[in-house]
Length: 110
Length: 194
View 1 (cartoon, rainbow over the protein chains, first blue to last red):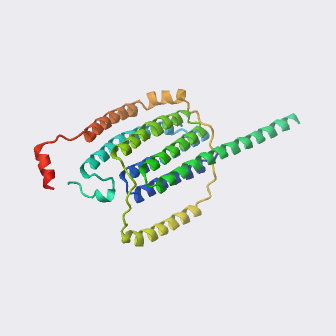
View 2: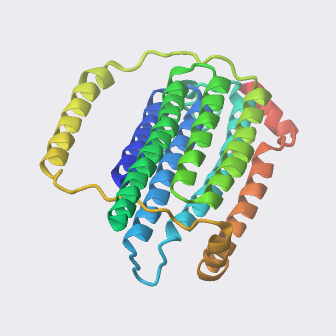
View 3: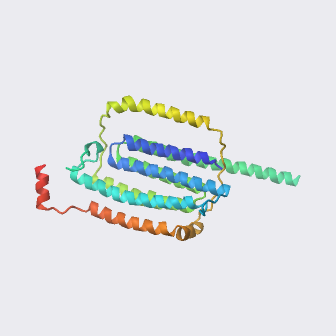
């Protein structure tokens, strides 16, 4: 089986790509997609840790080893809610400013 | 003699499993990392969205390798399906074009890059000094819907219900935010003044 560290390295690379995109991208939709990429990286480490925990047969505070997979569902729900609200905010911003460039969205009130 | 043969066969088959596992992990991982880098390299948001879908599909393959079947299915249906459709719809609705580049501030280049290099060197030193921990094998995980379902609806029932309230609030918030604002005379006057 593949060692846990491989999955964690892959998860870290994806998270780092997300952070880089969040910092260097100027399109607000692409920035949003970078956040989704970060959430995906975290999800991968959740599932990998759940598998590792199951492999070593651990149990802590009454939580079963599959809890990591349940947490992934909650992360997905939060990501879906965040995407819905965030894209609605993007549409509202575009309606008032007619731009998607975050450098031109620097005032709270028009 | 027979016993030796069986154990040898088992060792061989374990090695074979490891190699196939490793090959699949590397293939899916390569697709995921390439998609993530392509997301950064593309300037048009629709290309970034498509590479993000590739990343999510590859991650679903990784989840299958870890034994998490149900998570992989939900990853494809919810993430690569629903959420990315939302993104693509928004990109098309707003007619988003190629992003404009702006010059970054000089302070960020002069201080940020050396600072980041210094920080990463420090982190690398710390990690290399404590790299004595050995790798742990990951076993197959029972992640079928049959095992996930009772967990989700017994142990995690309260968080599950709370997330349903969260989704409800998000739906209402999205509808309120995205609906057209009422065109009041005062508002149009204020906008004209600007």
